[in-house]
Structures are given as structure tokens and as C-alpha cells.
Amino acid sequence: MNPINIKESLAVSVSGCGNEAVASDFAQRLGLEMLGEVKPSKERRFPFLMVYDQYGPSLVETGKGAPGPVRADFVSGKVDHRRKFGGGKGQLIAKAVGLKSGITPHVLDGTAGLGRDAFVLASLGCEVTLLERSPVVAELLSAGLEQARLSYDVAPIIALMTMISADSIEWLTTQAEAVADVIYLDPMFPDRDKSSLVKKEMRLFKPLVGGDLDASALLKAALEKARYRVVVKRPRKAPEIEGVKPTLKLEGKSSRYDIYTLKSLEGLRGALSD
Image 1 (tube, rainbow, N blue to C red):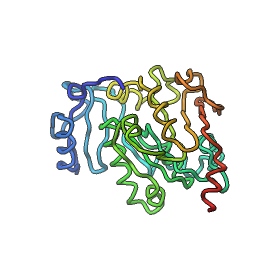
Image 2: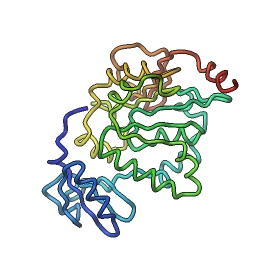
Image 3: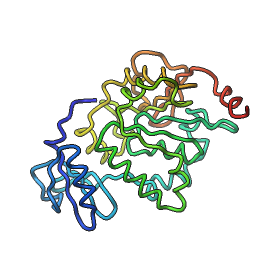
Image 4: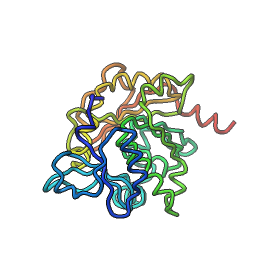
């Protein structure tokens, strides 16, 4: 990950019925300035704000004409639509991790982001562990998960998701044994196609998070700690991650899944039936 000095780029604001104590705790942990209630469109000192309102934290770009806030939302919008109409186990991501009748792997998402892919897998019955190393993104993700636990429809899915705020490479290398049946990775490609990430999120995340320039090391760590396979999501035309060649590839319209097979998931079927 690129070294980003977020203290110069990000400040914390509380508006409306936002939780000032939670906002202050986040600011103190990261050494960020607390601005109180400000209008993002009129803020000039910082290009980004973490705004805490009645819905929790959201990341906002400041200045006139900037796009609206980004937050982790598992209850409404595109995520909810995908849960209801996304195609179930016929989705490429489900095929990539090996979901099929009798086989529901435990998945570790090593690049959780806002948790959308992990949520899809959990909605299909997978137990998912989410790792996110950016403290800014982790704050959004954690709040989104907490909010979703209050939803009658979504809470059972969220119960299958466990979040860990940690650097995936460091965390994986400290584990004594395999941590999941499948490890799923979606590193932020430095020159990623705009179509593969919502433009608003790209505009906010790239300056604060940077590109995952250590993707090769992450893949290596994942291959050492997965039981059955590692799956890497890439923009469809992006090169493979340097190092080991994938066993097979699944291509969609804008994305591609590179699959690194360690052993057959049919062994998982046998393990579950024992």
C-alpha cells in the first residue's frame, strides 16, 4: 500500500445527530483534527472529511461540486438489490470460490473494502472473515455491519461475517495454520478501469488508500494459508499478479477471477459429511 499521510488529507466532522464520542475516538486513534459541524462544500483546509451523522460515519470529498458521501450500506441500494436479484449461486464470484450443492466453503476476504463481495458470499451461506487494513475503510465497514445487524432481513447474513481490522499480509503470516477454505483477494489495481469501481469511491479511496503495490506478497501469503484455493478478482484486461500462474480464469464483462487451486474442493464435501 502506498504511504499516505492522511493527517494532511482527512479531518473529522460531526453533524446532525452524529455520535461525537465515536467520532472523537476515531480522530484520536488516527491523530486527525476534529472540526465539529462543517459543510463539506465550504471546507477548504482538508480535501476529505469523515462525517458522523445519525446514520454513522461516511467519507466525503470537500469543495464545491464534490460527489456525495460514501458509506458501507448492506440494507439498501445496490447491495440490497444484488442480494435479491443478483443471480444466487450462478454469479461468477460464487463459481470462483467453488460454491455448489454440498460445498459451502469458509472464505477469508483479505481485501474487504466496503464488504460488498463478502456480503454476497455470506448471503449465499458462506461464513466469511473480512480483513481490512485501511483504518478509514475499516471504520466505514465496521459501522455498516453494526447498522445492518439491526435489520430483520439482513441480520442473519451479517451473523456469518466477522471483521478484523488488520494488514492481511502481516495477519496471514502470523497464523500457525490454514485460516480458511478459500482466500479471496481483490487488490486495488493501480490503473484500475473506472468501470470496475464506482467512480465516486475511486475518487475518494485512491488518495487515502493508494494502490495495493504489494499484491504479489499478499498472494504469496494467501497461498500459504488457504486450504483449497485462492481467488483473485481483477479488472478483465489487467495483467495477472506477478508470481504463481493461476490454475484457471473466469471472465465476466468487466472483471475476471484468477483461481489458484491447491486441492479439490470435493475434499471439503467429504470433510463436511464426516
